[in-house]
Length: 116
Image 1: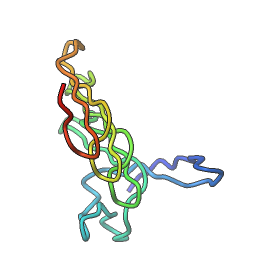
Image 2: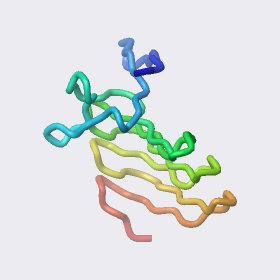
Image 3: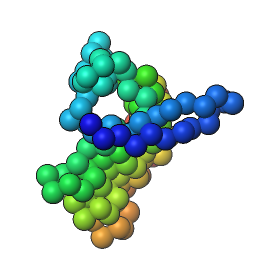
Image 4: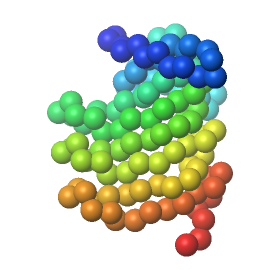
């Protein structure tokens, strides 16, 4: 399995994070884990369309979505981006049409959609 290793500086600590293909993960006790080692994933989990282009890229911390999430159309135009905090949607989520124009914005707080 080919992985790109990224060095991330977090709070003065250096952490090795690997990009991993979603097909190489499994769920164990509610966490996304590496299929081979069964250890929770820390790093970007990538999902691909059949033709090999990126469908989504989401950051996981110890097996839980925590950080930015990006989803793409097959054309590789961004379709959605937002942030997770401890596995829950948090902050502004932007949805776009395939031509790049804004479709809608939603705001979440601890996983709950906030009223306009």
